[in-house]
Image (cartoon, rainbow, N blue to C red; front, side, top):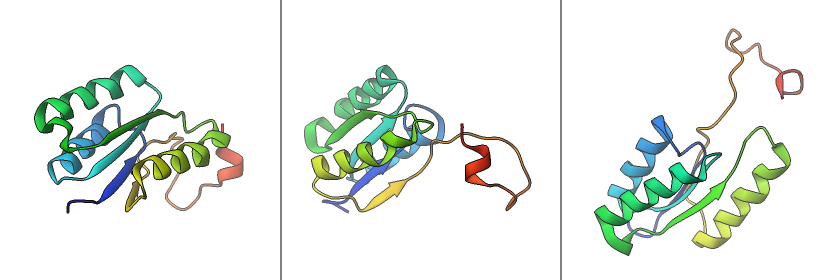
Length: 109
């Protein structure tokens, strides 16, 4: 899998963090986003300690409730990583409703 890249939103904790570590183990270059830069920095440090500089890790602050920033940040990471093979849309806002009954315009913050 060398040469592959993945961008993960919500990578500072939980599933996003675990995915970042797993993709790093598989040799992917990483673009990681989250609201909390200090937690992203901790993950980058952990990946660097495990794999040295073999794994490229780019970080960006992104709050997915600020919609105008989403495409800009993803495009920045895509450019800085030299392309994107996978985008994991892990971050989000939850307002519980039955599956299929959501409406983006009605529920956006």
